[in-house]
Image (cartoon, helix red, strand yellow):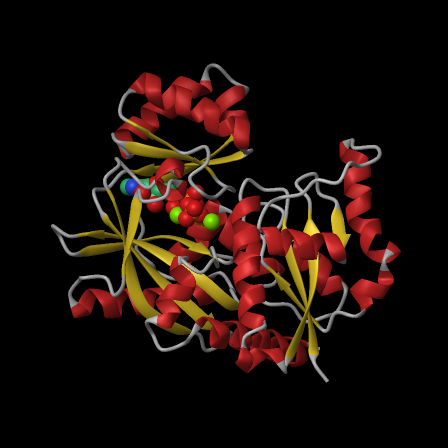
Length: 363
Ligand code: ATP
Ligand code: MG
Ligand code: MG
Ligand code: MG
């Protein structure tokens, strides 16, 4: 009998459309010749308002590739939240049929441990990191603390919270003075819990710094400021559970000032080079650091680990880990594995097997 895979996609974050593309690519891989006898897909679509849908609508979204929003009854925050929880218990037939979940949701409310907590409570295996790995990987302050503990090199940074920025007009100038003295310009101001470069600013002057801190605080209670470095950007894919493996490494190229939202999502603005044209020793160092980073945050299944390479000095800094990286046919994560000898259908198969192994080891 076939294993029923609950493909969970869409979601409330700004990366809703990317999630649909990722889910389409995964669905296609599960229906290839090598996988079709093994797996059956049960699609679950989370609308932008947070409502969960099973059955025909998700299938339609997978086929068309475009978001769908069914007109909903009371749409205030509380009903949406209730729907999210009740939705699953109200349609026990579809939910109970799932043998293994494949959440492919990027960003907050999907990549951050919230969905993983729900799936853990349901006691059904799921692909990817658990609650801890997802939450630590998502929050840049917690992530950097875990990386520092593991001895991974990072650029200088300062962690802040919204209250320090908004609540006390006497503290704020001192805070800015301190950032100027310890990090200097340019520096990067980031909300701690987002992705796709949303809310991030590269600042070069005091007024820019003040405005960027205020803006970042409107996105998140937790904010991080980092010293800016002139770098090449390298990425490594990791696959496995307790003994993870690293892929060949790739490079992101672009002509813009940095890898901002527009560069990420405008066709043709960014390029991928696989394998990255860097010295062999740099490749090995990055692969080793990627596996250490994976273990440091307690990731599982998959993660894409991103690095800054300062060509002039040969230094490598870890930038971040993404525990549910983009998974479309043209995304870095599956392409890195394809260049490492693991095809897209094999990769999806392997991830499901890793989910089953992790579940049976923990129960
Ligand atoms: P993702 O979409 O990969 O999850 P993100 O929103 O988590 O990204 P970051 O990766 O932290 O954001 O930063 C986005 C981009 O900003 C980087 O890819 C890089 O181009 C630039 N950048 C961020 N921090 C620095 C830094 N300290 N020095 C130089 N460039 C930086
Ligand atoms: Mg990120
Ligand atoms: Mg991300
Ligand atoms: Mg990034």
